[in-house]
Amino acid sequence: RTPLRARPGGMAATSPPRRGVSLHVDSVTLRTRLGAASSAPNHRDKALEAQCARHAQRHASDPTNHDVLYAWGLTLQERAECAEETAAAAPHTHPTGNLDCAGRTSRHPNAARDAYLNAACEKYAAAVSLHPKFPAALYNHGIALGDLARFSQTKDAYKATALWKKACVKYARAVVAAESINVCVVSSLPKKRSDGEERERSPKPYDEKREMNYSSSSESTSSSFSHENESVRALNNWGLAEQRLAGLATSSRERLQRLTRAAGRFRESLRRDASFDRAAYNLGTVMYALAELAQRRARKLETASSREEIAELESLGKVVSKNNQVAYVLGASAPADAEACFSAAAMHICLAAAGTSNDASRKAYRASLKLVRHALPRTPNWTNSVFTGALRRCVKHASRGGDEEEEEEEEETIGGWGPWTPFAADHASFFSFSREEEQAKATQREDLPESHALSETPVPRGTGTDERMRRRFRVRLADIVFVAPASRDASFPSGGDGGDVASGFLTCDAAGTMEWFVAPDEPSRDLWVDALSLASDIARRGKSGALERELEERVDEER
Image: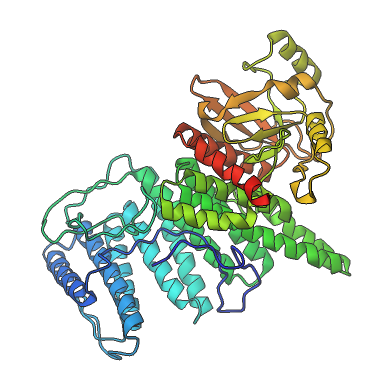
Protein backbone atom coordinates (compact mmCIF):
# COMPACT_ATOMS: atom_id res chain seq x y z
CA ARG A 1 0.00 0.00 0.00
CA THR A 2 1.18 3.49 -0.86
CA PRO A 3 -0.48 5.92 1.59
CA LEU A 4 -1.12 9.55 0.74
CA ARG A 5 0.82 11.60 3.23
CA ALA A 6 3.18 14.53 3.47
CA ARG A 7 6.74 13.75 4.37
CA PRO A 8 7.56 15.01 7.87
CA GLY A 9 9.71 18.10 7.74
CA GLY A 10 9.31 18.66 4.01
CA MET A 11 7.72 17.50 0.80
CA ALA A 12 10.72 16.16 -1.01
CA ALA A 13 14.37 15.51 -0.38
CA THR A 14 16.60 16.47 -3.25
CA SER A 15 20.09 16.02 -1.87
CA PRO A 16 22.36 14.22 -4.33
CA PRO A 17 21.81 10.58 -3.37
CA ARG A 18 24.48 8.03 -2.72
CA ARG A 19 24.54 5.26 -5.24
CA GLY A 20 21.76 2.91 -4.29
CA VAL A 21 19.84 5.52 -2.29
CA SER A 22 16.72 6.83 -3.95
CA LEU A 23 15.53 10.42 -4.18
CA HIS A 24 12.35 10.65 -2.15
CA VAL A 25 9.61 12.67 -3.81
CA ASP A 26 6.20 12.48 -2.17
CA SER A 27 4.19 11.94 -5.33
CA VAL A 28 0.97 10.02 -5.63
CA THR A 29 1.17 6.95 -7.80
CA LEU A 30 -1.66 4.90 -9.24
CA ARG A 31 -1.23 1.76 -7.18
CA THR A 32 -4.30 0.05 -5.79
CA ARG A 33 -3.91 -3.35 -4.23
CA LEU A 34 -6.80 -5.60 -5.19
CA GLY A 35 -8.56 -7.83 -2.68
CA ALA A 36 -10.38 -7.22 0.57
CA ALA A 37 -8.46 -6.01 3.58
CA SER A 38 -10.21 -8.55 5.77
CA SER A 39 -9.53 -11.58 3.56
CA ALA A 40 -7.10 -14.15 4.88
CA PRO A 41 -3.87 -14.19 2.84
CA ASN A 42 -3.78 -17.99 2.60
CA HIS A 43 -7.37 -18.22 1.39
CA ARG A 44 -6.83 -15.44 -1.12
CA ASP A 45 -3.58 -16.99 -2.32
CA LYS A 46 -5.28 -20.33 -2.92
CA ALA A 47 -8.00 -18.66 -4.97
CA LEU A 48 -5.39 -16.86 -7.06
CA GLU A 49 -3.44 -20.09 -7.48
CA ALA A 50 -6.57 -21.71 -8.88
CA GLN A 51 -7.01 -18.79 -11.27
CA CYS A 52 -3.42 -19.19 -12.47
CA ALA A 53 -4.12 -22.87 -13.14
CA ARG A 54 -7.21 -21.98 -15.19
CA HIS A 55 -5.27 -19.38 -17.18
CA ALA A 56 -2.55 -21.95 -17.87
CA GLN A 57 -5.15 -24.41 -19.16
CA ARG A 58 -6.79 -21.79 -21.36
CA HIS A 59 -3.45 -20.70 -22.76
CA ALA A 60 -2.55 -24.30 -23.56
CA SER A 61 -5.80 -24.71 -25.50
CA ASP A 62 -5.62 -21.30 -27.19
CA PRO A 63 -2.01 -20.02 -27.27
CA THR A 64 -2.79 -17.08 -29.57
CA ASN A 65 -5.36 -15.48 -27.25
CA HIS A 66 -3.72 -12.33 -25.92
CA ASP A 67 -6.53 -11.74 -23.42
CA VAL A 68 -5.69 -14.99 -21.65
CA LEU A 69 -2.07 -13.93 -21.27
CA TYR A 70 -3.13 -10.49 -20.07
CA ALA A 71 -5.44 -11.90 -17.40
CA TRP A 72 -2.74 -14.35 -16.36
CA GLY A 73 -0.32 -11.48 -15.87
CA LEU A 74 -2.86 -9.61 -13.73
CA THR A 75 -3.35 -12.64 -11.51
CA LEU A 76 0.40 -13.05 -11.09
CA GLN A 77 0.70 -9.41 -10.08
CA GLU A 78 -1.92 -9.92 -7.43
CA ARG A 79 -0.07 -12.99 -6.22
CA ALA A 80 3.00 -10.79 -5.88
CA GLU A 81 0.98 -8.52 -3.59
CA CYS A 82 -0.02 -11.50 -1.47
CA ALA A 83 3.63 -12.54 -1.27
CA GLU A 84 4.62 -9.04 -0.18
CA GLU A 85 2.02 -9.11 2.59
CA THR A 86 3.27 -12.54 3.65
CA ALA A 87 6.86 -11.27 3.66
CA ALA A 88 5.91 -8.51 6.07
CA ALA A 89 4.28 -11.04 8.43
CA ALA A 90 6.79 -13.91 8.10
CA PRO A 91 9.99 -12.66 6.44
CA HIS A 92 12.09 -15.78 7.01
CA THR A 93 9.94 -18.70 5.96
CA HIS A 94 10.24 -20.98 2.95
CA PRO A 95 13.80 -20.17 1.90
CA THR A 96 13.86 -22.34 -1.23
CA GLY A 97 11.54 -23.46 -3.98
CA ASN A 98 10.43 -22.88 -7.57
CA LEU A 99 7.54 -21.27 -9.45
CA ASP A 100 5.47 -23.55 -11.69
CA CYS A 101 3.02 -22.77 -14.50
CA ALA A 102 0.11 -22.63 -12.06
CA GLY A 103 1.83 -19.96 -10.01
CA ARG A 104 2.80 -22.09 -7.01
CA THR A 105 5.96 -21.33 -5.09
CA SER A 106 7.68 -22.24 -1.81
CA ARG A 107 10.40 -19.59 -1.94
CA HIS A 108 11.20 -16.96 0.60
CA PRO A 109 8.24 -14.51 0.35
CA ASN A 110 10.38 -11.68 -1.07
CA ALA A 111 11.81 -14.01 -3.67
CA ALA A 112 8.31 -15.24 -4.42
CA ARG A 113 7.12 -11.69 -4.95
CA ASP A 114 9.89 -11.01 -7.47
CA ALA A 115 9.24 -14.33 -9.19
CA TYR A 116 5.55 -13.50 -9.62
CA LEU A 117 6.36 -10.03 -10.96
CA ASN A 118 8.89 -11.39 -13.44
CA ALA A 119 6.38 -14.00 -14.57
CA ALA A 120 3.74 -11.27 -14.96
CA CYS A 121 6.15 -9.27 -17.13
CA GLU A 122 6.64 -12.33 -19.34
CA LYS A 123 2.88 -12.75 -19.77
CA TYR A 124 2.37 -9.08 -20.63
CA ALA A 125 5.23 -9.19 -23.13
CA ALA A 126 3.71 -12.27 -24.74
CA ALA A 127 0.29 -10.59 -24.90
CA VAL A 128 1.77 -7.51 -26.57
CA SER A 129 3.68 -9.68 -29.06
CA LEU A 130 0.30 -11.03 -30.17
CA HIS A 131 -1.49 -7.67 -29.97
CA PRO A 132 1.04 -4.78 -30.25
CA LYS A 133 -1.58 -2.06 -29.69
CA PHE A 134 -2.68 -3.26 -26.27
CA PRO A 135 -2.45 -0.21 -23.95
CA ALA A 136 -3.69 -1.96 -20.81
CA ALA A 137 -1.06 -4.70 -21.09
CA LEU A 138 1.69 -2.17 -21.74
CA TYR A 139 0.54 -0.01 -18.84
CA ASN A 140 0.41 -2.91 -16.38
CA HIS A 141 3.75 -4.18 -17.66
CA GLY A 142 5.16 -0.79 -16.71
CA ILE A 143 3.65 -1.09 -13.22
CA ALA A 144 5.20 -4.54 -12.74
CA LEU A 145 8.60 -3.25 -13.84
CA GLY A 146 8.21 -0.31 -11.49
CA ASP A 147 7.45 -2.63 -8.60
CA LEU A 148 10.59 -4.63 -9.36
CA ALA A 149 12.57 -1.39 -9.55
CA ARG A 150 11.27 -0.17 -6.18
CA PHE A 151 12.30 -3.41 -4.52
CA SER A 152 15.76 -3.22 -6.11
CA GLN A 153 16.38 0.47 -5.53
CA THR A 154 18.11 0.22 -2.15
CA LYS A 155 20.13 -2.87 -3.08
CA ASP A 156 21.19 -2.35 -6.68
CA ALA A 157 20.89 1.16 -8.10
CA TYR A 158 22.08 0.10 -11.56
CA LYS A 159 19.42 -2.60 -11.80
CA ALA A 160 16.75 -0.23 -10.51
CA THR A 161 17.74 2.42 -13.05
CA ALA A 162 17.49 -0.08 -15.89
CA LEU A 163 14.07 -1.26 -14.69
CA TRP A 164 12.70 2.29 -14.33
CA LYS A 165 13.90 3.10 -17.86
CA LYS A 166 12.14 0.00 -19.17
CA ALA A 167 9.01 1.09 -17.33
CA CYS A 168 9.20 4.50 -19.04
CA VAL A 169 9.34 2.74 -22.41
CA LYS A 170 6.25 0.68 -21.57
CA TYR A 171 4.30 3.74 -20.48
CA ALA A 172 5.35 5.61 -23.62
CA ARG A 173 4.19 2.71 -25.77
CA ALA A 174 0.93 2.56 -23.81
CA VAL A 175 0.27 6.23 -24.60
CA VAL A 176 0.95 5.67 -28.30
CA ALA A 177 -1.20 2.54 -28.36
CA ALA A 178 -4.08 4.27 -26.58
CA GLU A 179 -3.96 7.17 -29.03
CA SER A 180 -3.90 4.86 -32.03
CA ILE A 181 -7.14 3.08 -31.25
CA ASN A 182 -10.61 4.53 -31.64
CA VAL A 183 -12.51 1.55 -30.30
CA CYS A 184 -12.70 -0.03 -26.89
CA VAL A 185 -10.52 -2.95 -25.93
CA VAL A 186 -12.72 -5.98 -25.43
CA SER A 187 -11.79 -8.84 -23.16
CA SER A 188 -13.46 -12.23 -23.07
CA LEU A 189 -12.14 -13.01 -19.60
CA PRO A 190 -13.53 -12.38 -16.11
CA LYS A 191 -13.23 -8.77 -15.01
CA LYS A 192 -15.61 -7.88 -12.20
CA ARG A 193 -14.90 -8.88 -8.62
CA SER A 194 -17.76 -9.82 -6.36
CA ASP A 195 -19.16 -7.12 -4.08
CA GLY A 196 -16.99 -6.17 -1.13
CA GLU A 197 -13.77 -7.58 -2.55
CA GLU A 198 -12.27 -4.41 -3.98
CA ARG A 199 -10.63 -1.77 -1.82
CA GLU A 200 -10.43 1.73 -3.19
CA ARG A 201 -7.15 3.42 -2.28
CA SER A 202 -7.06 6.31 -4.72
CA PRO A 203 -9.43 9.02 -5.95
CA LYS A 204 -11.98 8.08 -8.57
CA PRO A 205 -12.09 7.75 -11.54
CA TYR A 206 -8.49 6.60 -11.58
CA ASP A 207 -8.52 4.30 -8.59
CA GLU A 208 -7.19 1.03 -10.00
CA LYS A 209 -3.66 -0.25 -10.10
CA ARG A 210 -4.74 -2.46 -12.92
CA GLU A 211 -7.36 -2.14 -15.58
CA MET A 212 -9.00 -5.41 -14.71
CA ASN A 213 -10.85 -6.84 -11.73
CA TYR A 214 -11.87 -10.40 -11.21
CA SER A 215 -14.89 -12.54 -10.52
CA SER A 216 -14.75 -16.16 -9.53
CA SER A 217 -18.43 -16.60 -10.29
CA SER A 218 -18.47 -15.33 -13.87
CA GLU A 219 -16.76 -17.15 -16.70
CA SER A 220 -17.33 -14.67 -19.50
CA THR A 221 -17.82 -10.93 -19.36
CA SER A 222 -16.64 -8.02 -21.49
CA SER A 223 -14.64 -5.01 -20.45
CA SER A 224 -14.19 -1.66 -22.14
CA PHE A 225 -11.48 0.90 -21.65
CA SER A 226 -11.40 4.52 -22.60
CA HIS A 227 -8.20 4.95 -24.56
CA GLU A 228 -8.09 8.57 -23.40
CA ASN A 229 -8.19 7.49 -19.76
CA GLU A 230 -5.54 4.87 -20.50
CA SER A 231 -3.19 7.54 -21.80
CA VAL A 232 -3.91 9.83 -18.82
CA ARG A 233 -2.93 7.11 -16.36
CA ALA A 234 0.09 6.03 -18.38
CA LEU A 235 1.40 9.60 -18.59
CA ASN A 236 1.02 10.06 -14.85
CA ASN A 237 2.94 6.87 -14.07
CA TRP A 238 5.52 7.77 -16.72
CA GLY A 239 6.12 11.00 -14.83
CA LEU A 240 6.49 9.07 -11.57
CA ALA A 241 9.07 6.80 -13.19
CA GLU A 242 11.01 9.86 -14.35
CA GLN A 243 10.97 11.14 -10.76
CA ARG A 244 12.42 7.86 -9.55
CA LEU A 245 15.15 8.10 -12.18
CA ALA A 246 15.90 11.61 -10.94
CA GLY A 247 16.56 10.10 -7.55
CA LEU A 248 19.01 7.63 -9.05
CA ALA A 249 20.75 10.22 -11.24
CA THR A 250 24.50 10.58 -10.74
CA SER A 251 24.78 14.22 -11.87
CA SER A 252 22.93 17.44 -11.18
CA ARG A 253 22.24 17.98 -14.86
CA GLU A 254 20.64 14.57 -15.31
CA ARG A 255 18.59 15.04 -12.14
CA LEU A 256 17.20 18.32 -13.44
CA GLN A 257 16.47 16.86 -16.85
CA ARG A 258 14.59 13.94 -15.34
CA LEU A 259 12.51 16.19 -13.10
CA THR A 260 11.57 18.52 -15.97
CA ARG A 261 10.67 15.52 -18.11
CA ALA A 262 8.43 14.36 -15.27
CA ALA A 263 6.80 17.79 -15.26
CA GLY A 264 6.13 17.43 -18.98
CA ARG A 265 4.46 14.04 -18.48
CA PHE A 266 2.24 15.28 -15.67
CA ARG A 267 1.28 18.33 -17.70
CA GLU A 268 0.36 16.22 -20.71
CA SER A 269 -1.78 14.06 -18.44
CA LEU A 270 -3.56 17.19 -17.21
CA ARG A 271 -4.04 18.49 -20.77
CA ARG A 272 -6.08 15.37 -21.43
CA ASP A 273 -7.99 15.45 -18.14
CA ALA A 274 -7.76 18.60 -16.06
CA SER A 275 -9.82 16.97 -13.29
CA PHE A 276 -7.07 14.42 -12.59
CA ASP A 277 -6.01 15.85 -9.23
CA ARG A 278 -3.24 13.30 -8.67
CA ALA A 279 -1.26 14.53 -11.67
CA ALA A 280 -1.69 18.11 -10.43
CA TYR A 281 -0.37 17.15 -7.01
CA ASN A 282 2.51 15.17 -8.50
CA LEU A 283 3.42 18.17 -10.64
CA GLY A 284 3.49 20.24 -7.46
CA THR A 285 5.97 17.83 -5.87
CA VAL A 286 8.21 18.17 -8.93
CA MET A 287 8.16 21.95 -8.59
CA TYR A 288 9.00 21.64 -4.90
CA ALA A 289 11.95 19.36 -5.65
CA LEU A 290 13.17 21.81 -8.31
CA ALA A 291 12.83 24.68 -5.81
CA GLU A 292 15.10 22.89 -3.36
CA LEU A 293 17.64 22.23 -6.10
CA ALA A 294 17.46 25.90 -7.12
CA GLN A 295 18.15 26.94 -3.53
CA ARG A 296 21.18 24.67 -3.47
CA ARG A 297 22.47 26.19 -6.73
CA ALA A 298 22.02 29.69 -5.32
CA ARG A 299 24.04 28.83 -2.23
CA LYS A 300 26.81 27.35 -4.34
CA LEU A 301 26.85 30.44 -6.56
CA GLU A 302 27.42 32.62 -3.52
CA THR A 303 30.56 30.67 -2.61
CA ALA A 304 31.77 29.86 -6.13
CA SER A 305 35.29 31.12 -6.77
CA SER A 306 36.09 30.17 -10.37
CA ARG A 307 34.48 31.29 -13.61
CA GLU A 308 34.07 27.68 -14.71
CA GLU A 309 32.12 26.79 -11.60
CA ILE A 310 29.91 29.85 -11.95
CA ALA A 311 29.25 29.12 -15.62
CA GLU A 312 28.33 25.51 -14.84
CA LEU A 313 25.90 26.50 -12.10
CA GLU A 314 24.26 29.12 -14.31
CA SER A 315 23.91 26.61 -17.13
CA LEU A 316 22.00 24.27 -14.81
CA GLY A 317 19.30 26.91 -14.46
CA LYS A 318 18.85 26.89 -18.23
CA VAL A 319 18.27 23.13 -18.20
CA VAL A 320 14.88 23.60 -16.56
CA SER A 321 13.92 26.89 -18.23
CA LYS A 322 14.87 25.99 -21.82
CA ASN A 323 12.48 23.39 -23.16
CA ASN A 324 14.46 22.50 -26.29
CA GLN A 325 17.14 20.53 -24.42
CA VAL A 326 14.95 17.99 -22.68
CA ALA A 327 11.43 18.18 -24.07
CA TYR A 328 9.83 15.15 -25.62
CA VAL A 329 6.43 16.72 -25.07
CA LEU A 330 5.48 20.37 -24.74
CA GLY A 331 5.58 21.51 -21.13
CA ALA A 332 8.89 20.05 -19.90
CA SER A 333 9.99 23.28 -18.27
CA ALA A 334 10.11 25.01 -14.90
CA PRO A 335 11.25 28.35 -13.48
CA ALA A 336 14.96 28.60 -12.78
CA ASP A 337 14.71 30.38 -9.42
CA ALA A 338 13.58 28.83 -6.16
CA GLU A 339 10.92 31.40 -5.26
CA ALA A 340 9.03 30.89 -8.53
CA CYS A 341 9.25 27.11 -8.15
CA PHE A 342 7.84 27.28 -4.62
CA SER A 343 5.00 29.45 -5.91
CA ALA A 344 4.33 26.93 -8.69
CA ALA A 345 4.32 24.08 -6.16
CA ALA A 346 1.81 25.96 -4.01
CA MET A 347 -0.39 26.62 -7.02
CA HIS A 348 -0.52 23.00 -8.20
CA ILE A 349 -1.08 21.51 -4.76
CA CYS A 350 -3.73 24.10 -3.92
CA LEU A 351 -5.59 23.30 -7.15
CA ALA A 352 -5.30 19.57 -6.47
CA ALA A 353 -6.77 20.02 -2.97
CA ALA A 354 -9.65 22.11 -4.32
CA GLY A 355 -10.33 19.82 -7.25
CA THR A 356 -10.39 16.41 -5.59
CA SER A 357 -13.60 14.76 -4.46
CA ASN A 358 -11.81 12.28 -2.24
CA ASP A 359 -11.60 13.28 1.42
CA ALA A 360 -8.47 11.23 2.15
CA SER A 361 -6.66 12.75 -0.81
CA ARG A 362 -7.74 16.26 0.15
CA LYS A 363 -6.39 15.74 3.65
CA ALA A 364 -3.04 14.59 2.29
CA TYR A 365 -2.84 17.42 -0.23
CA ARG A 366 -3.63 20.02 2.40
CA ALA A 367 -0.98 18.62 4.71
CA SER A 368 1.59 19.23 1.96
CA LEU A 369 0.06 22.59 1.10
CA LYS A 370 0.86 23.88 4.59
CA LEU A 371 4.52 23.79 3.63
CA VAL A 372 4.12 26.12 0.65
CA ARG A 373 0.83 27.95 1.09
CA HIS A 374 2.75 31.12 1.97
CA ALA A 375 4.11 31.16 -1.59
CA LEU A 376 0.67 31.74 -3.16
CA PRO A 377 0.64 35.22 -4.77
CA ARG A 378 -1.63 38.12 -3.88
CA THR A 379 -3.69 40.38 -6.14
CA PRO A 380 -3.91 44.19 -5.71
CA ASN A 381 -7.15 43.94 -3.72
CA TRP A 382 -5.15 41.89 -1.24
CA THR A 383 -6.87 38.60 -1.94
CA ASN A 384 -5.01 35.40 -2.64
CA SER A 385 -4.73 34.24 -6.21
CA VAL A 386 -3.73 31.06 -7.96
CA PHE A 387 -1.13 32.69 -10.18
CA THR A 388 0.04 36.12 -11.31
CA GLY A 389 2.43 37.28 -13.99
CA ALA A 390 3.03 39.59 -16.91
CA LEU A 391 1.33 38.82 -20.25
CA ARG A 392 0.74 40.47 -23.59
CA ARG A 393 -2.71 40.04 -25.08
CA CYS A 394 -3.39 39.95 -28.77
CA VAL A 395 -5.81 42.81 -29.48
CA LYS A 396 -5.91 42.54 -33.25
CA HIS A 397 -9.08 40.50 -33.12
CA ALA A 398 -10.08 41.30 -29.53
CA SER A 399 -13.81 41.23 -28.95
CA ARG A 400 -14.26 41.23 -25.17
CA GLY A 401 -14.72 44.74 -23.79
CA GLY A 402 -13.61 48.10 -25.12
CA ASP A 403 -14.63 49.56 -28.47
CA GLU A 404 -13.24 48.87 -31.94
CA GLU A 405 -11.74 52.33 -32.42
CA GLU A 406 -9.58 51.94 -29.32
CA GLU A 407 -8.50 48.47 -30.43
CA GLU A 408 -7.60 49.70 -33.93
CA GLU A 409 -5.59 52.56 -32.42
CA GLU A 410 -3.77 50.10 -30.15
CA GLU A 411 -3.03 47.84 -33.10
CA GLU A 412 -1.52 50.72 -35.04
CA THR A 413 0.75 51.68 -32.18
CA ILE A 414 2.10 48.30 -31.05
CA GLY A 415 1.41 45.93 -33.94
CA GLY A 416 -1.60 43.98 -32.66
CA TRP A 417 -0.26 43.07 -29.23
CA GLY A 418 -1.08 44.90 -26.05
CA PRO A 419 1.66 46.04 -23.68
CA TRP A 420 3.15 43.83 -20.98
CA THR A 421 0.43 43.87 -18.34
CA PRO A 422 0.08 42.13 -14.95
CA PHE A 423 -2.59 39.41 -15.02
CA ALA A 424 -3.96 37.23 -12.26
CA ALA A 425 -6.24 34.23 -11.80
CA ASP A 426 -8.16 33.69 -8.60
CA HIS A 427 -10.98 31.29 -7.74
CA ALA A 428 -13.48 32.99 -10.07
CA SER A 429 -11.80 35.11 -12.77
CA PHE A 430 -8.85 35.63 -15.06
CA PHE A 431 -8.16 39.35 -15.25
CA SER A 432 -5.63 42.11 -15.85
CA PHE A 433 -4.67 44.94 -13.51
CA SER A 434 -2.25 47.84 -13.51
CA ARG A 435 1.16 47.93 -11.87
CA GLU A 436 0.26 51.35 -10.48
CA GLU A 437 -2.77 49.83 -8.78
CA GLU A 438 -0.61 47.08 -7.34
CA GLN A 439 1.95 49.51 -5.98
CA ALA A 440 -0.78 51.71 -4.49
CA LYS A 441 -2.23 48.74 -2.65
CA ALA A 442 1.22 47.74 -1.47
CA THR A 443 1.79 51.24 -0.07
CA GLN A 444 -1.43 50.98 1.93
CA ARG A 445 -0.12 47.76 3.49
CA GLU A 446 3.34 48.89 4.51
CA ASP A 447 2.58 48.05 8.12
CA LEU A 448 2.25 44.35 7.26
CA PRO A 449 5.17 41.97 7.82
CA GLU A 450 7.45 41.12 4.95
CA SER A 451 5.83 37.71 4.45
CA HIS A 452 2.69 39.55 3.27
CA ALA A 453 4.48 41.35 0.44
CA LEU A 454 3.01 41.25 -3.04
CA SER A 455 4.44 38.95 -5.64
CA GLU A 456 7.03 40.95 -7.52
CA THR A 457 6.53 39.50 -10.98
CA PRO A 458 8.55 41.81 -13.23
CA VAL A 459 6.99 43.39 -16.27
CA PRO A 460 9.41 43.00 -19.21
CA ARG A 461 10.76 46.20 -20.64
CA GLY A 462 10.51 47.42 -24.18
CA THR A 463 6.88 48.58 -24.47
CA GLY A 464 4.82 51.47 -23.16
CA THR A 465 1.84 51.32 -20.83
CA ASP A 466 -1.82 51.88 -21.56
CA GLU A 467 -4.37 51.99 -18.74
CA ARG A 468 -7.22 51.16 -21.13
CA MET A 469 -5.62 47.82 -21.93
CA ARG A 470 -4.61 47.17 -18.34
CA ARG A 471 -8.17 47.50 -17.02
CA ARG A 472 -10.12 46.06 -19.91
CA PHE A 473 -9.78 42.30 -19.71
CA ARG A 474 -11.72 40.06 -17.33
CA VAL A 475 -13.31 36.69 -17.95
CA ARG A 476 -15.03 34.23 -15.65
CA LEU A 477 -13.08 31.02 -15.25
CA ALA A 478 -16.28 29.02 -15.63
CA ASP A 479 -16.62 30.46 -19.15
CA ILE A 480 -13.20 29.19 -20.26
CA VAL A 481 -13.61 25.78 -21.86
CA PHE A 482 -10.22 25.33 -23.47
CA VAL A 483 -6.64 26.42 -22.76
CA ALA A 484 -3.71 25.28 -24.88
CA PRO A 485 -0.01 26.13 -25.19
CA ALA A 486 1.45 27.07 -28.54
CA SER A 487 4.88 26.45 -29.96
CA ARG A 488 7.06 29.45 -30.66
CA ASP A 489 5.90 31.40 -33.66
CA ALA A 490 7.56 34.20 -35.59
CA SER A 491 4.36 36.25 -35.30
CA PHE A 492 4.77 36.42 -31.52
CA PRO A 493 6.53 39.47 -30.06
CA SER A 494 9.87 39.20 -28.33
CA GLY A 495 10.09 37.82 -24.82
CA GLY A 496 11.02 39.52 -21.61
CA ASP A 497 14.70 39.77 -22.44
CA GLY A 498 13.99 41.39 -25.79
CA GLY A 499 15.74 38.57 -27.63
CA ASP A 500 13.93 35.24 -27.88
CA VAL A 501 10.42 35.07 -29.21
CA ALA A 502 7.83 34.93 -26.43
CA SER A 503 5.85 31.76 -25.72
CA GLY A 504 2.13 31.90 -26.38
CA PHE A 505 -1.10 30.20 -25.38
CA LEU A 506 -4.75 30.63 -26.22
CA THR A 507 -8.05 30.41 -24.37
CA CYS A 508 -11.47 29.71 -25.78
CA ASP A 509 -14.88 30.23 -24.17
CA ALA A 510 -18.20 28.48 -24.73
CA ALA A 511 -19.16 31.01 -27.41
CA GLY A 512 -16.04 30.16 -29.41
CA THR A 513 -14.24 33.41 -28.65
CA MET A 514 -10.48 32.81 -28.71
CA GLU A 515 -7.94 34.99 -26.94
CA TRP A 516 -4.19 34.85 -27.58
CA PHE A 517 -1.60 35.70 -24.97
CA VAL A 518 2.18 35.55 -24.81
CA ALA A 519 4.31 35.07 -21.71
CA PRO A 520 7.96 36.17 -21.36
CA ASP A 521 9.29 32.60 -21.48
CA GLU A 522 8.30 28.96 -21.67
CA PRO A 523 8.12 28.26 -17.91
CA SER A 524 5.75 31.21 -17.44
CA ARG A 525 3.64 30.07 -20.39
CA ASP A 526 3.39 26.53 -19.04
CA LEU A 527 2.44 27.73 -15.56
CA TRP A 528 -0.27 29.97 -16.97
CA VAL A 529 -1.71 27.07 -18.95
CA ASP A 530 -1.63 24.92 -15.80
CA ALA A 531 -3.34 27.58 -13.70
CA LEU A 532 -6.10 28.40 -16.19
CA SER A 533 -6.75 24.80 -17.23
CA LEU A 534 -7.10 23.50 -13.68
CA ALA A 535 -8.88 26.52 -12.21
CA SER A 536 -11.39 26.72 -15.07
CA ASP A 537 -12.10 22.99 -14.77
CA ILE A 538 -12.73 23.44 -11.05
CA ALA A 539 -15.07 26.36 -11.79
CA ARG A 540 -17.00 24.43 -14.45
CA ARG A 541 -17.51 21.58 -11.97
CA GLY A 542 -19.03 24.01 -9.49
CA LYS A 543 -16.13 23.80 -7.03
CA SER A 544 -15.04 27.45 -7.07
CA GLY A 545 -16.06 27.69 -3.45
CA ALA A 546 -13.62 24.93 -2.54
CA LEU A 547 -10.81 26.78 -4.31
CA GLU A 548 -11.78 30.03 -2.60
CA ARG A 549 -11.61 28.31 0.80
CA GLU A 550 -8.15 26.93 0.02
CA LEU A 551 -6.96 30.41 -0.96
CA GLU A 552 -8.50 32.01 2.12
CA GLU A 553 -6.81 29.45 4.33
CA ARG A 554 -3.51 31.28 3.87
CA VAL A 555 -4.91 34.42 5.45
CA ASP A 556 -6.24 32.43 8.39
CA GLU A 557 -2.89 30.73 8.93
CA GLU A 558 -0.99 34.02 8.83
CA ARG A 559 -3.34 35.55 11.37
